[in-house]
Length: 188
Image 1: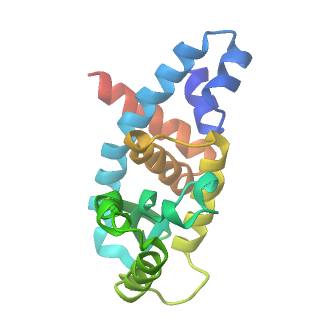
Image 2 (image 1 turned 135 degrees about the vertical axis):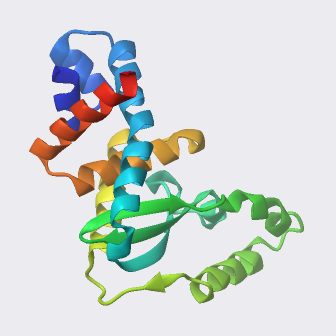
């Protein structure tokens, strides 16, 4: 199916609609369907290989448009990422925005920002063998992937995270094969 191949080649819904002549809504709907099927696929793969976990690290992902303003630190997505044999699996931790009102309520934003930043650095979860590793390469890849979408709403971030994991973990020919099989099983 051409839509699966275009998704696997990292085309977005708008590009796909133009290339195929279908409506944007149809392409987006199909891509969203693929994204919703990815978490189960990635979870199953991780569960089969979880004994191969060699490293893990915590990462705060913040959309590029929000990185220049310190007040947006609470909008960051907190990820715990595992490297299992050269593949990655991420757990999306509870949102940080639950702390935002308490920190900003009394007008001491700068003081609280510094304290919160210090807290995050001290209480970091990590086990890494080197600075250049699969997890850091994945985070760079995720960062580039997210730039393509120019912002993703908070409710859908998880699905775009899983899309990035899928694209990072599988080579192009494998992506198409795995997705075709997954979507066939998903329909049944």
